[in-house]
Amino acid sequence: MSQESEWLKVESLDLEAQGVAHNAEGKVVFIEGALPGEIVQASIARRKNNWEQGQLTAIRKESSQRVTPGCPHFGLHAGACGGCKMQHLQAGAQVAVKQRVLEDNLWHLGKVKPEVLLRPIEGPTWGYRYRARFSVRYVAKKGVVLIGFHERKSRYVADMQVCKVVPPVVGNMLMPLRALIASMAERDRLPQIELAMGDEVIALVLRHLEPLPAGDLQLLRDFAAQHGVQWWLQPKGPDTVHLLDAGGPDLAYSLPEFGIHMPFRPTDFTQVNPHINAALVGRALRLLAVRPNERVIDWFCGLGNFTLPLATQAREVLGIEGSEALVQRSRENARANGLAHKTSFVARNLFEMTPAQLALDGSAERWLIDPPREGAFALAKAVADAVQDPAQAPGWTPPQRMVYVSCNPATLARDAGLLVNLAGYRCTAASAVNMFPHTAHVESIAVFERP
Image (cartoon, rainbow, N blue to C red; front, side, top):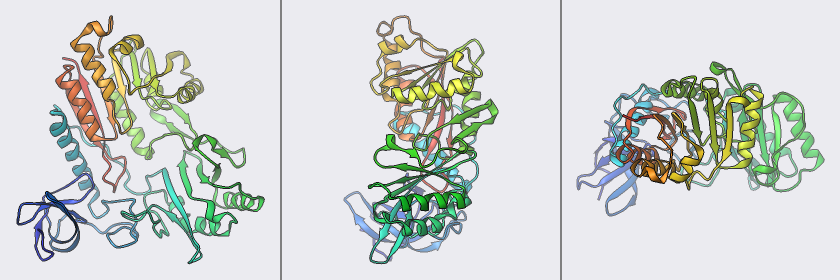
């Protein structure tokens, strides 16, 4: 059992950005706020048979990578914002930690070791977040409105006056937004404001549990005119989102390297970090190395973030997604970019793929795979089964090269294990992608090739 007076040497960081140490008895101790190489004391809050968890209380030897957090709301104290976990670690060191997390997951979970570790993809570390979901709470006893992320390990909303990870124009808008909501008649029935920024538009989606009276709607219009934002209203689920007032520029982002203009709705999935997304699309296509006469399949294609750039290089691209509604949006984006003749889209349950379904969708020389956090287990297993027993997928041939873009290193490692150890692929390259600076979230990209 750890004593609060015991000095602990921090050996590494875990996936939650907690320092990992061992006490005098050899038990693992997870320490919030501690960094590798430091010698610290901790206040232990949880004790289990095999591990303990606590919070940093003192530092005897400080890491050279420790820095002063850039946001006044970051910290371990009560009420601190829980939106970021790594602001106390130098930005370059954060990326190195994420690269190591990727390597460790690939090896320990998938028994896969990339032949080459590519330089991580990184970019701006502040003002990068173009999407965010802020909770809204009217605290009647204090007569104040709170807007922000939740406090660390709490359901309460942090008392945030500014946010440094969203663009300054939005981060500095929190206090005016608080004043706006406080002035509205339905202020206690407005649980959430979602941010979605495009190249020219700042969209704010207001979730409201009751119809808004005319006075509240006018307050929203006045705020929009003063701050240059576009209000969308969400009375129920995401499908009910609609513009408060039509007009103005479309919500859209661009991929200038490929001449792509991508309209989207504020509740559509788009990458949080447009700077990293543009770099990620560019690297993925360079790694895929598509030739003009080749067919490509883009699995989990979304709105066409990879499909449309691929269509500027390939003979034909098939985009596959899980919902017919999303497939229709992809078709619209392809038409808008003059790429309808080189693209096609179909809806599939991508979590129930089989070798027979692979054969129905046809062979392709290259694959791009960009699944959600659950990964692409069914797809990877279908490939492995088809390679081991070709009769299950008559006439189908496996792709020569795959590029897998992941937002969860654990599920990437699991799927990589199937592709390498059962389907005969080599993992020729991999790297971390710092999509979410100052958080413990690890995105990555990996390349698989047939011998």
